[in-house]
Length: 344
Ligand SMILES: *Cc1c(COP(=O)(O)O)cnc(C)c1O
Image 1 (tube, helix red, strand yellow):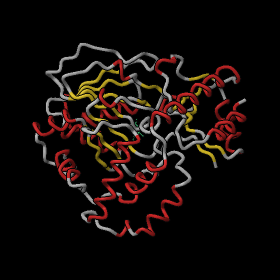
Image 2 (spheres, rainbow, N blue to C red):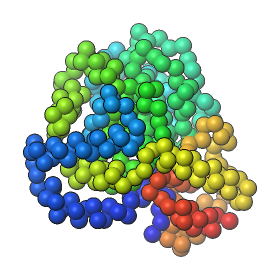
Image 3 (cartoon, rainbow, N blue to C red):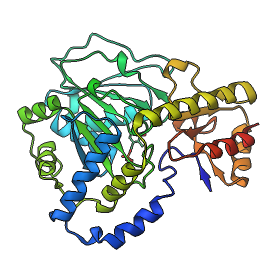
């Protein structure tokens, strides 16, 4: 079976062997304060930083999901408030979750999905964190990191559907959040948070310690290569194995961008379909939304189903008029060729 679902998405086929290895190596029966676990956690993080070119002075933490990271940011980094600039459903959801925790000091600036992110004069006396969904999975757009000016406030990026797929300039942000079931080609159940020294300093000044997942507890545990709760040991192990296997992100990024261009040109030139996003400058490299009219979507879903290919459904307002294609590294070129034959 072939799947282009943008999360949970296709896992690397090598995972089958890694699962077997995890059982045989005995790591799953080790407790999470044992040296064996701590060594494994350390090497998982080291490899992750190495393959993704994450600066040495940035810290990597594991949580249970990207959604949990939204809450951690609201709890532990947003003493004054947070500002959310978004153009789609995930950015809006992040805003709404923050609002439940931070209350009235949560501000939002929605923008059009065909437009570049607005660069605004904002008032940093009102918020500590600027929250941006770098890759909006719902509509297939992405924010160019060069369009975000540096800010006195912390800059937080949701990169759930781009991390591991495209190279990111980590120096542009202070808090990066994600999960593993999209571009990283792993089973769901592990969230990732990456923090700059500035973010850690800010959390220490705020000093919030009211929750089991208060950032300072997470940080203190990870300093010892432990976790603030009993972790998903298997997922951390699988991440380590996948990081051993994959190429450096610069190489992966080149391939993903080239395949995106190839597929978008194919859609525009050789099919009756249209790309949902006209503006090439804001189109995502890793999630492609394709639109059609009338019954076309229903018919193509039937055709792909017969070919044992799963498309991603359209999201929210675009449920019946679009489908989405994950352009994630675990998906192979031949699978894209098979998809193309169903779209002409
Ligand atoms: C999938 C997704 C999430 C949610 O991830 P979970 O691991 O399910 O919490 C958040 N943000 C974006 C942009 C996503 O694509």
